[in-house]
Length: 329
Image (cartoon, rainbow, N blue to C red; front, side, top):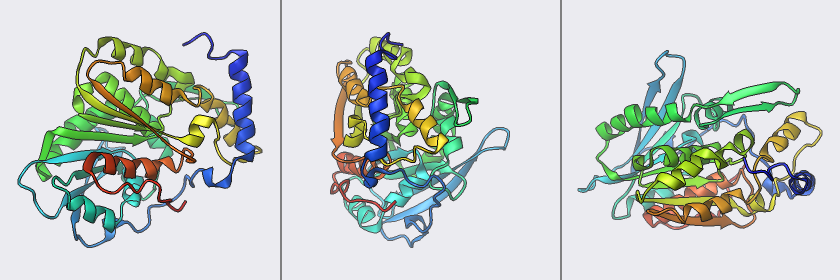
């Protein structure tokens, strides 16, 4: 942990962030955490993509991951690239038929691997908090009680490699050397920890709005340092994406009378607002990595999920960049 993590200057910056949270424009508000999926392309007749669903159970049978697999209807001769997307239920809500049609018309349409949880929730906060974080977090909640959460990222990475990927390969003809991992927020953090611990698992890593504040900024510590020192030229392309409002510290309109909101804002002060940009600059110095940083003007944390997913489809597969098209909350 850096010595200036809790310096007077940092404290002042955190207070400024809290003030911005009260006065920021409404278009930066978070989505409803209880939002359901509703109707998506998964429910529509196959035109250019057909979707198959399979479920992976945990060893004890208590947990279930739902994978929606998008396979181009027109079978290509060559093996297809594959995009593995966390928060798969939310990612499915971003897709529409024009987007799928444009993907299907590209020279190498990707197979879409949407990894979510076996329910109808857009986001499952409790499960993703456990699965997407490689570090245990001990933090006070809105009642002042210490919560110990997280730490399941390495187990999820194993599950993806040993159980989800073989099933994808059984169902679709994919190229093992053209595989991408995308994640937003805690999912972006999972992308980074996977890069740090098993860089050969994917060829492309997209970390959108990674939650570098997690566990008082632990992701900015030893795991990153060891990776930077020991990667030794292993090739990978890395995208780091961030909303302009995130980098400026503008966290949107928040109800500061809500103890849960105040507790969350206190936690996210574990990393500076521009930590993701600084991280991209450090990773760009690692031999073998091709790093691109992209900032989305005027966007806050929540809207970065659809924007970054659309931008990823454009950057990797050449379709129109729809990231500036707003999605309804």
